[in-house]
Image 1 (cartoon, rainbow, N blue to C red):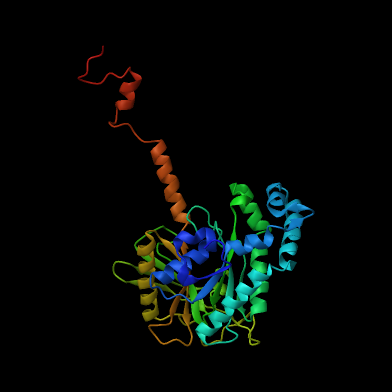
Image 2: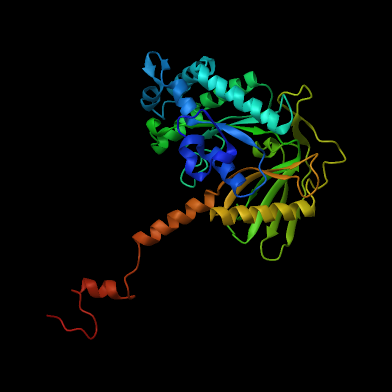
Length: 366
């Protein structure tokens, strides 16, 4: 499997992170679990490595060039990463990689009945979407991409984004070796989203595991993720189903460009701005799916979702990504580590008796 350039989502799962990255593995796992996920394929880490293994910057292999950088040297980082990205974006991949990507896109078009199917092209690094190291937002995503040539171009851009200043600095500061790194790319059918957003299976503000917290807005989820809109907020009790609503005034939304390629940001129509972007029925379905995903993975999740504009009710909620929630998860892990290192003695005053030579009441010394 590791030598293949592309793999369909249905052929991968959580055990394939090294091959298709965190995002690709999670999408395949969700599909296997019966969750409604837009279909697609992953360009594997093998394709990435096959492309970059012979590339150099100033005669130096890319991994060695990155490993030698100082994360405190902002100017040096900016110059070096710009050079690396330029090389990756301009270097054509091997013919067999290009042919495999084109064939997989053609098959996806056939599967969906659209010869120029719009897709999202999304980075999927091998160290992202884990509870230990969240790479979320450090690599690139491109929406509403059409045509095999454009797909391959944006795959190369995703590869190059692995060497952004932010991503390289993150790896250097966390001591993540370049030799352990790989970049896969997810190519996924676009959902024509009427509404979209993110949800957490615990409160992101308090850590409360008894609720699902949903942020929602009109249009594509990129507006919510990027912070371009103040979303509606719904906090739903897992126990009673009670919904606490905060409906925001949503002035901007992201929509497909009328040209059919890319995304534009425009004003939300006046009649929609102060209306809830999802119905109570859609909230209930999102909560049900969130609980199913949390149960499947066995830990709280950070989920991206969309409600399709044209799909019928009951079949219009799609999950675009799920990963372990990290903020409260990391805090709890740190608290557990602290508790282990400061574990009390078996009885409240045993440490005092130990200081006195190990003598305890009712026990004679030697």
